[in-house]
Image (cartoon, rainbow, N blue to C red; front, side):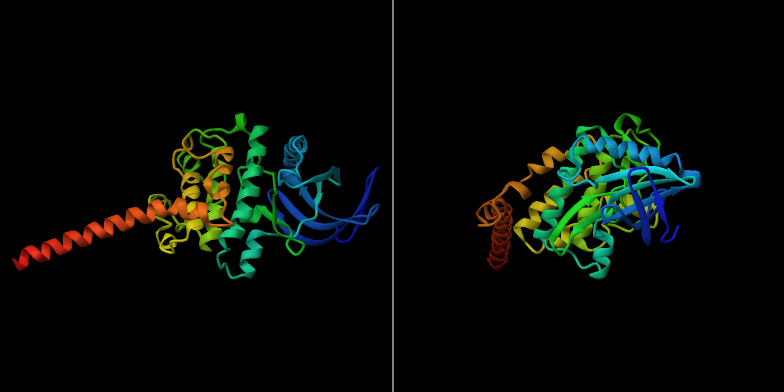
Length: 312
């Protein structure tokens, strides 16, 4: 198919260079010849042809809630050609994994993370409203729209593994390591919380520049779930970071029924406090600082009292 034009009754496309691998297929750069519009074309072939209509069905559901407004990739077209299924998408920039790799996985700033977090929570809220679960949220499936003209404007992509909530089966294994939720790993009942867990881990990677824990074995993963993964970060005593870590901890609760929902997350103080003048941040963090100060003061008093007693 390299650079070959293929025709449809309403439009014609020309395939270009390889962009990436998606679930069940490859993604190539393309051009809509009638309008000269750049597009991304996902090609699903052979054994995975059934996946094409399933993904397109999910994308049709998304159309009902305005994909662009809710930070979800926009589907333009879908058709079959030469025993292959084709899905045509808007052209975006690069995924977050590629973006971070070019930075040698140095962490993003908290203001940049806030912009990304809010957009993706809006996306999850929209998916929840139509009973759709993405099931494969990760750095690779979050795209920068156009980083030069719209810094850190992102969209959630690749709905090849998306499922209606009622179709999620207990015991099903999905999600890429290390984004796999504990309930998936343990074969427990599932809900849309699997997406919140995966998003929480993704956002934590933006903050740390690496995975929260080693994922080379189930033992290390389970041990990692119970570790204090943010202790080093919190030593910075940065108000915005503390608020963000508090949000992450609620996104990464092991019990999916206690895990924060998209609606609740968007109302978290990380987003609602007025961080521009820092008044609200100082207020939010001062309680923690005061408690620490009181403990340190009391410890010093006890230490001095002990020394005085020994002197006497």
